[in-house]
Image 1 (cartoon, rainbow, N blue to C red):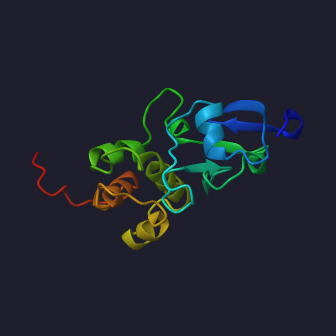
Image 2 (image 1 turned 90 degrees about the vertical axis):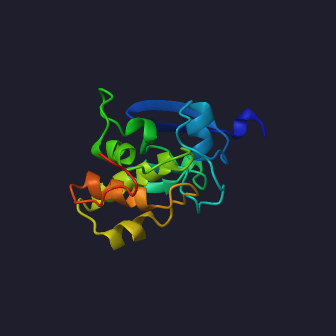
Length: 168
């Protein structure tokens, strides 16, 4: 494919504007990771079922491994790197993932935190069933999900059961 077959895109990612020419089939996950250098967004399954590549496009969850970059032209994208406050202070959902054991290896964590943020933006006090339904598109092989559920509840100000085996 020659350079004449490229498409001009302009995306705002975590508040910074990027203007580039890309091939029409350039995946958003690749644009974010390799063209922009934000490696927090992971590619897990490459078919949109694991959630590791979850980003927010205009505030809505999107599987960036299924989204062509030209389709995101003109949008505002938030990756895991853009979720913390501008001064670097963690959002309650990020701190809750740490405090409640909501992650282990870190492969799915960016997508989990991004999806959890989207959930809390949509519903600030989800019950456990709503959390499970919302998060079902984000797979994790390490935590067993209890820490993730506790983290979302804690970030929303709800009472959480203590971490099994943890002592004060």
